[in-house]
Structure formats: structure tokens, C-alpha cells
Length: 256
Image (cartoon, rainbow, N blue to C red; front, top):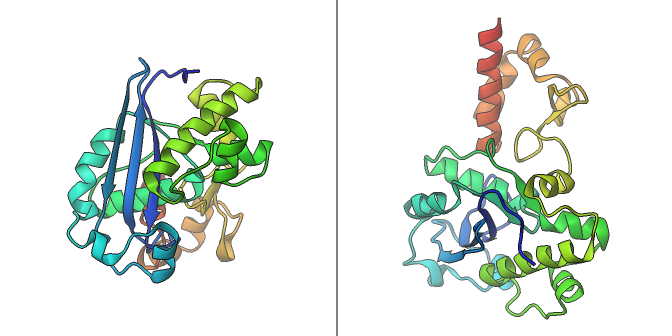
């Protein structure tokens, strides 16, 4: 089976210093790009995160400070990585909740104006969890009859994710071999930012999903508590969330 594509799609996986999207850094990134004509391209980079890699993270992926000491930083690699994904939809395993948000943070730090406005994302883990409730290794065994070698290697996990999606499309006739439909199927909630701190209500209006203004419209908060915007901009929130909120603030000012 081949994916039915109208544009390229990049399967990718990150190994990182930890699981805090706002603070942690990428130490390895693998991208497997599939083109509508069936051509494929892959690339893996080791990345110097510029911060220490905690022992508990090294225990998971095997990447040490010494291993990446002489590797390029994400800032140095950002143009290469962006050029590979800029024309593509994105896919991964738990990518909507972790890999895409963290990649966006790294891109913004590097000065790349990264967003998802003109692309969709497919989270293979969500399909798996909706259908079977398993781990990545079990998913590869279940759908493809294979054992995942070198688990927690970004390249191995990326290739496994691609093969699992093909297996899922073969197993479930109700899944459409269409990236937009798969993106809608794998979307957990209608969030405006990657971190899910700003979400859409049933009317398509932006509202906060956290804190003292949880479930309150963003525009209403701008009017009632103008200082809240400044507090978020100065606090330890994801950069992409701040970017989205700035856009909403400018929209509000332009409609007054």
C-alpha cells in the first residue's frame, strides 16, 4: 500500500533532554519524507542541545553529553530542517502533544516563523489508541508483525511510525487514506496553540483552557484584565502560545 498524498508528508521523531515542551531541547531528530509520486527521502541529525542531558533521559535514548558535544546546535540546523518540512504535512507518534509543540519551540528560538496554518498533522498514536490501546513497540508487532529494534532511536521510531500507519490503513477500512481526514481523526481537541492552552468553543471562539480564566473567552479577558496578556508574555509559557496570543491581541485591537 502507498499513502494517497496531495502534498509531501514528513514522519518525524525527536529524542530530547526531557519532556517539558517549554524548557527541554532536541538531541536527535529523524525525518522520513514521502512524496505524492512515491519517492522517499530520509535524514537524521544529532543535535547539541546546549544544556546538559539528564541521566534519566540518557537512560532512555542512549545519547550522552559527550556524544553530541561536537554536533551542531538546533539553531545551526534549523534552516536544513525547515527546508525539508516546509512544504509538507507532518506525522508522528504522540506528535500532536509532544513532538510538534517542542519542534515549534525550537524553531521559534532559532528565529524561524514556524506554524501549522497551511498543513495538517496525523498522530499515529491516536489512531492506535482509538483502535487498540498499545505502545509503539506493540503497535509495530500488532500491525506489521515486526519487532522494534533499537527502540528510542529517533530513526527506528520514525520508520516504525510510517510502517504502522500503512498497517492501520490496511486493517481499518473506515480509515480514509487521506491526510486531511486522518488529521481530523487524530485531533484530540480543537486547540489554537500546540500546548492546548487556548482552545475553541462550540462556536469557534478562542478561550483559555487553564488558570483563573479557564473557559473564558480570550477577547473578554483582554477587555476585563489587560494585564493578563502581559503576565503571560513575561511568564514561563511556550513561545508558540505567546505567538498565538499576540496574534489574537492584534486582531482584537484592529477590530475595535
